[in-house]
Figure 1 (tube, rainbow, N blue to C red):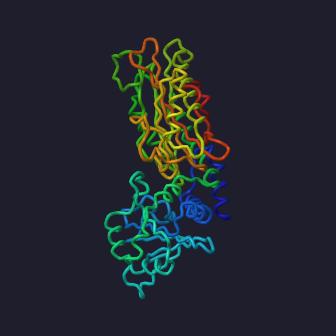
Figure 2: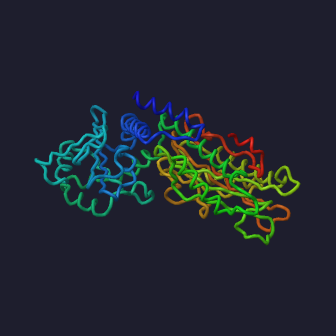
Figure 3: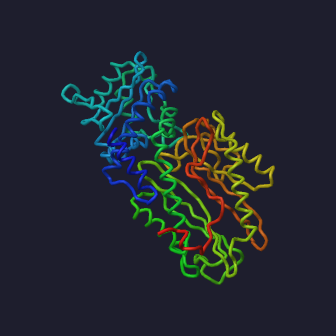
Length: 435
């Protein structure tokens, strides 16, 4: 715990400087966050879902997405076949954490395979199952969530073949438990998340500046690779290749990929750090000669997209499905004359994380399966959407595409590190960028 607090203090102290912890200090934080989740999160989740035994199975280099989140920082992969068993004792209400493996899996999951007594690994697992006699044996199978569908065909088949006949009817999908495990953020994680989102905002702010962009020379692809390199240089990872798009009034003799005055720029970017992910989309406008601000029409279009964000957040209520939130937001937005497209999603261990889907860009009537999932507290979302506006002199509707990360709990839903409320302007005073 002392090591965790020290590493966390370093993280908070260096966040404003866009620095990251050493690999060793990152491991301290990751492992302490994981132990906290096992001890304080998992027992309640197993009780609520009615699952008393959860079996997670993977082989090296073919890891279940859930198992990847359960391995200690020192383990980059499973080892040979790794089997994790979580058993909630109905009498003590405590969760036993066992590894049917050659080694303990970190400090939280004890090794539970006596290889002399059970040379076959499946026999060791079956002995654990027989001894505890669970009502349900949950495996990671899921039709709707790839994150919760991680047991492969071979492992599933061999496990079922080894399982005694009287236990086979007890096998159930672990989807409700796996989704909750992946989507739920702890209080400790939410101490850290604002620093990640702040770092992402700062990277965008610098990328959309004259430090990086010279109109008439710099291409959108140049900026994309600047973002990719910047993320790497700062010590972060990214879970997807960034994108930079140009919306332009009329045609230009210039290369369509070269950024010029009058362009509306859009970036989609996310970083990965301490096993958490961000996902942000923002805009910048390149001033024309004689301009000191973006055209009023663009400013109004941006304000309309901000309003769409407000409308969407107003629909977040515990127990509503993603599809219900989507339908309610679209109805209100259209009533205000906004042309909306909403495609928001949970975020956390994965960029496109497990949990309720709130639309997809090509599914504005609802998303079967994942959109039927209910909203729960202590979850994070990327509020991702766009509002289209027809502007004077623009042949195509201008789409203001925004995405900001937010956290949903009993107090409501709030942006983790604020949101963009006005366009970045290029060029702008170098002094505003700091040292």
